[in-house]
Length: 419
Image 1 (cartoon, one colour):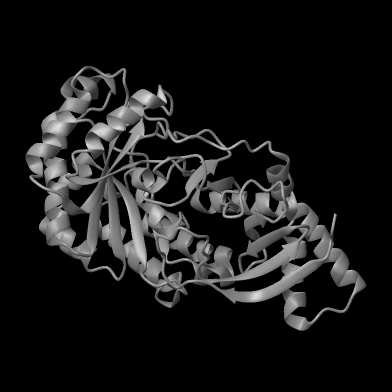
Image 2: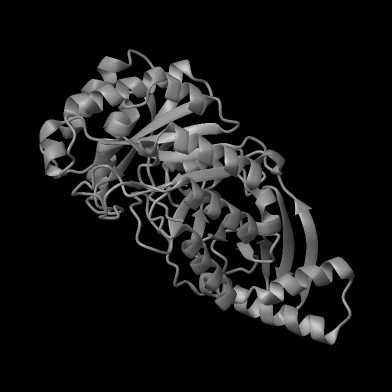
């Protein structure tokens, strides 16, 4: 195996996230060629993206990405019809952990992918040897020193350290994180949610609790140190956990404004700072016009994702979601009203796909959408996902197409991606 390392420090990518049908990188990164692979590293010398160049690499337009949680995600362009129409992106993220995709997955046991996922160890060792055996130009030496330190043990320790800073797990991110390729800085402003619905696979089982202002500031200060120079490559904050909207607009805005300053969003190499969070039916309906004005006045664009699940009473009962269907319909109508009135706020919502729910689940969804929207409205998205990540894909996709074919609101599949 070729162990030569070619280092191109401080490459510059795009400065704004875009929907592109070809591989693109954002912000500033280091490019390294090693062992038949092109690796893009963050400014701390840690591998973020890998593409193979050998004949056994699955496809020249596909790549692996390593997340902050040290998971590998494969971005695929092949074998899945209408990917953009179904998820709003040209590439399908395939996870190395159990997911809910109806569009297929990738075999991570393939030898070329296994070799690529082992690159952090071999690259760190090769960088260490090169530094000990040769004189290296100063900037390249700085990058190689960082690479040599980014061993697999270091990367795993970094993921654990992030979890310690947050004192929480993030089992799922809002679907609107797709707009920033899920590259978010997480800040926990609350824990749990208002409902703990019976069907939910990502609930914490604990009651809802708002973190204190001191706790939130301590997290943000620790995150500034954790990300270091690589802060410049992030323009998005995720305020967690599963119903951060219930923490109230004062807590949300205090965290967003402090994060904007302390985490340098105004200086990000990627323009268009955003804040993303989850909300529930009741926390969303509880927002006053003053709350909305406060959120719209933030220096970031705000995305709020609301879990509706179903408009059908028997289905909500089966799901053990303690919300009246009338409240769900009210939340959907208010989502449309907020999106019309506040250009710097965008509210999206989630509903479920499941062929085993009581008859009327999909029909009531279609009826509410058609009755509420006489024609297509361009703001806001309805995301649909299987209840438990299982089910007959053909039947679930048929349900998805029935709703999407109404063409009244952008309708996409929700891929449950964790941090």
